[in-house]
Image (tube, rainbow, N blue to C red; front, side, top):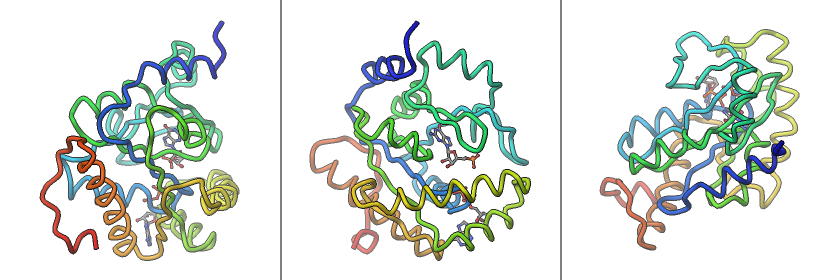
Length: 226
Ligand code: ADP
Ligand code: 5GP
């Protein structure tokens, strides 16, 4: 019986590290990750692709199986983990989440930059992997504002909201620790945060292009990166 770590190590050794570096966006629940990514995917539909995670949590109104997540049972998730199908997994707010090898491959096979929206246990698992990810932390202005956003989103029960806020305190500390991320986006104003994110990502991609990595990226106006 292989241990979880051995399964994950095996999964990594079968991943390609050629092509553009995947982008990882991490930040407390409610900090605005999905909102930022929606803007990015709308503006650059041919450049970026979302890594569709598995989760055992229930879908929210409007969330679709196979688009926002693969919604699975605990048993299905455990079976897939045992089969070595995941690059990383985590337990968050009482539910399991994970990035499958297939999720990343699907995006990479379309010639797109793979974007992962994952929490910090996942970041720790892939930080030094041969995926060689670019790590971005989405930092909310305060816990109070996070609570306001989460309540406004109207997706959580009081219990899950409190669990998410408890976790958020640890995540913010981790996110703000120097060396844990390549950049921190200060997400107070969404338009400003998006400009910051876009600038950072485009600069990274330009550097990769200079190093010979092929990217499906439109001509970038210098005002977008300076
Ligand atoms: P996450 O994906 O990090 O859990 P969301 O993108 O779902 O967070 O955002 C949580 C809620 O906060 C949503 O209702 C969203 O519209 C709102 N929101 C996101 N970013 C901001 C922002 N910078 N200022 C105010 N509200 C925001
Ligand atoms: P939500 O339930 O709000 O969609 O996501 C809760 C948390 O799980 C968020 O911090 C999100 O980034 C994280 N998450 C989503 N998918 C994955 C995944 O595949 N792996 C890990 N480690 N975290 C994930």
